[in-house]
Length: 93
Image 1 (tube, rainbow, N blue to C red):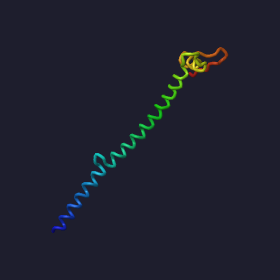
Image 2: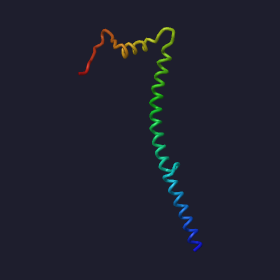
Image 3: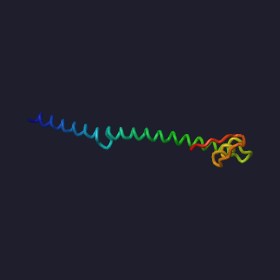
């Protein structure tokens, strides 16, 4: 009878720990969710780093001395919509 109680207690403790290792607050399910979230955040970080490097480049080109001709042309084209006189403009309908 004593051995049966010890065996039952061991099985109960094992089941308890296995359940919490799988579904508990720090279990395998939560770990899988954290790994998935980490992958999404890594993707977002890479996108933000791309934007940051472009902004750094633009800031570096905006020096108080003579402005960079390429940057001035890029701003004139993108922001102001300017084109050169000999260029053809194609529009989509």
